[in-house]
Length: 514
Image (cartoon, rainbow, N blue to C red):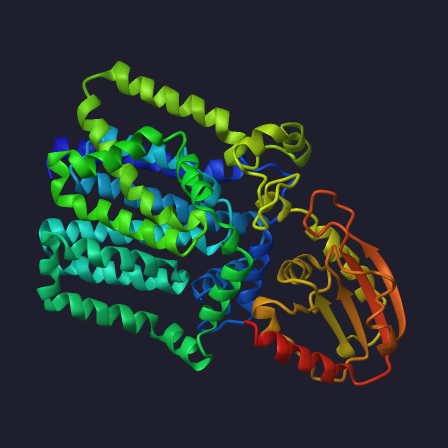
């Protein structure tokens, strides 16, 4: 390597390093302290205590991350670091994609800026499988681009590995495979089907994913039951217009790069050999639209499009500082404008004060199709410490804890208690998701700590009154902005009958609906 090449490489490394640091810092700095973990995050953190080859709602990879977090102490900021770091790795792959398609340093910086000034900034603040899902899709696109450009077999195996690990993180990546197949079939890229290495790579992917595949088979494919439940309770409210509008809203600040990426892949001759990417985008989007997929399911498709848009801008505008400077200024100014809509920088009171602004963009619309005071994700980040505190009050009053069951109304409540409780031996469970499989009742139940939903009837737990000698209401969640506001905590003591058998039959019945 010449001195000039070394200097260029060093310069690029410095810029990439700055973007990585910026990405991680912003993931912390742009989240208001009024917000706690999201309800889903508690479930994933609890999976570390129940390691398995699969779970009801997700594959096993995030449980491995949770186990590592638990090993390192499990602190709040450590949990936040993982999605931020995964987001930084996604930026690294975008940098590599731009380099692979002959983009210059300006194009690489534009691609990174477009990624940061978009929905990915928000996505990478949440400890959920979605961050790694986007990383896996982006890595898969990168390795396939490299393979079609150079036909080196190693990239096929790396592509297959990215798909397999992505599968172990979230089954959503199968939609990429579905979209890829017809896109490759209609172009010159279909010659890949004649390569024996493609089938060896598929075999490698199957071997990597095999533990989870066997887990699904042995349990009657719980993922299918989970998808049916989503279809019945959430996806039914997904409309075409809001779905498509969200795709634009996600990239309001990066819209020039997104549109440039789409248009150049269709019309720009130097990118003609990459048209399989735009066909993949179109076919995959059609599948999501047909299945009424949630808007964020598509996010793995966009980093590669932003990269192509950035390369085009880098090539065309590299000599016109005033032009690309204006584009950057627009991006940054618009980013500041939409930042409160993109990131949880506003407190709940500030959001309520600017309600019309949030309502205009459909951000107050929940999965039930109705508008509420806060965006659903933000309401899901409120009230958890209060729930754990009330459960602790009840827990401290029980003498014989070996015959106690702590049963929450949902997985968010159960996970929050297990994470925040000052009692390290507490084990809250619920009739939802994986918690249905985590009940431990070695001894007959004599007492229960029961949490109810916000809309449940109270009258001193009318349903359970015949089963216990004493029922005490410990308190209810007062946080006005939480989805759990109004949820109550009860202490039920002195079981009159065999409560254990009732609980076991209820568990079996609930499991049928998973």
